[in-house]
Image (cartoon, rainbow, N blue to C red; front, top):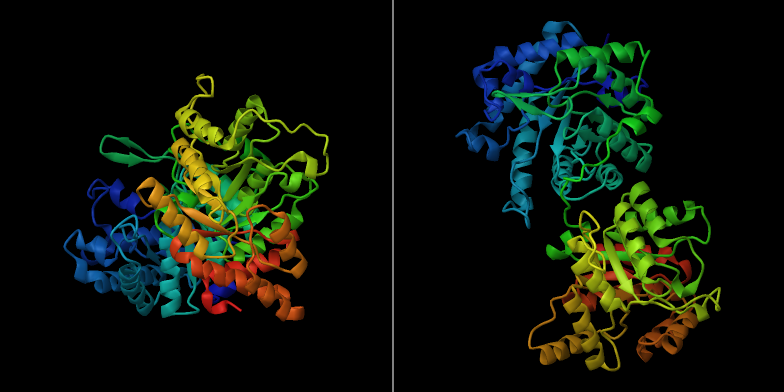
Length: 626
């Protein structure tokens, strides 16, 4: 049949069936080691590569990938072939084209395979973004020029590298089709700690034609990742290409356990989840693809979604913990924006999630979830955090007040939070119940914030409870403390801060400062008293002032907040545009303090999340500031 344009073919209800592994078949013949330069075989063994393509086409594949996964200047340079990028990529495309022509099928598409460069980007490696772009550009240009139908970016465990690869192609060819596939570990996070929902959102926003998951896991876990991605961005096109299970080495061979029939069943499952492109990665063969073809053409049996939930194994205890996204950013010196969100006074979360999507799209890096702010009855904060991370894919900071919790509940709640995948905590005293919904509610507490920080960092993160009893595997919490850099008595504030630092605080959320010179003065005083600079990362509070009445309330009734007369004058002069003036003031304050803080903690007043979104956008993109 005549072939549709690739984009038009994606729009059809029937998914495209991609091919399986190339390296697996090359390694299986015993003549090529698993660490050989398979890309170079395009020049020396063209017939062998074409034969493998032909086998996949005969098995029913609608899309085949060029043998160019590692054909970038860096990886080829390890084999003395750095200058052969263009020749190898061009040869690979010609081989694939010859295989399609020989098959007599006009409906087979050719995808130009591009894998990771093989060196981590700064600050975790030595490769600069500009150097990475240059390497991607060279390989992509050769593939597009040679005539591929689509570029496929696959097996990217580094989220930032994948986004950079997409941006490189978009700069070269704004509308050329691209499939962008991330790889996840057994804990369903990328190597850089990104969850499926966040990955899906970022890939869709980057302009990828198709987003998906490949390698790393077998069909069962890949299906759960695909579900999460589909839930986060339901209108996107998706691809999935799992491994044939987890590999094991037998003799000198790397073997994969998943059978062709097993893959066939999962092909229909992937289709039911919403995959537009389905194929295989490491360990898959023409037999696997043939079984998938048969299943897609005659869907008689599939792993149902309920069965999938039963089959998906629990994450093994041996999966290592990794730094949270928050700490990765702070350690890398990246200015970090987080916005405080209040949980709903209900068991429904749709509105909260809608607001958080707005904030995420505006540039918020994380979301702070408050716990009973102003002592108002709200949904439990750790439940809200879990739903946000699971459904939206943005990392959270759980506010954890000590007030109203005895030691039993404190430790039990912490274990529950950790089990739900929450790692960032902001330990605070909490608001007294007398100001809230239930003024007669119990208001006592067993442990002060600095002592709770010590309990978490020195006991629970070491695998013990407060009494020294084992809790099994240690927790891995990152803990923040409160800090007021505009305190009337900075010496007293520094004394409190010293206790929190000794307890092990990892970062601080600063109370909003409306007079930036106070931040500089606080740092100078700290260095005078302590004999060293303050190195604790401070994410400074910023409160967009949406009305004169709100500003007066903060100035007169919230301890520690002082708003200068100059700001009141600006608000009064703004008239009906006072909310936009408040956004401008907040953006200017952060810009002025930026050299002395490590991030912005936006606290929207009375649910004005639209103003917080404007501030977040202005921080990340100053040219958008009002």
